[in-house]
Image (cartoon, rainbow, N blue to C red; front, side, top):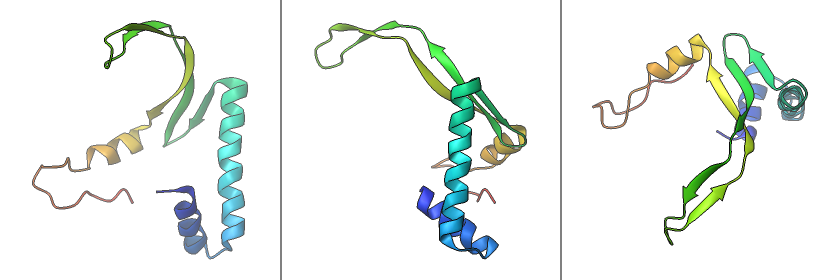
Length: 106
């Protein structure tokens, strides 16, 4: 799903103009990013937690040349799903499990 798809769904569901829905979606994403940068953590109850973690430098290997390379330290965003999200994900059927379609999240 793209942001555009999300805007269309929200606009239709709440019977509002797509321009308004786009502004709300973008504003929400902007606030999440601003809070992550300022505080390093965003907790959305019943959804999950976004958090900035530090990854230490490490040695890796270039698969083409088999040469060892140093991967520098960096910051990454991790997401820890809340109980409700984790439960929904657990309900999904894995490919090849005999089910023709995955269980919808809604």
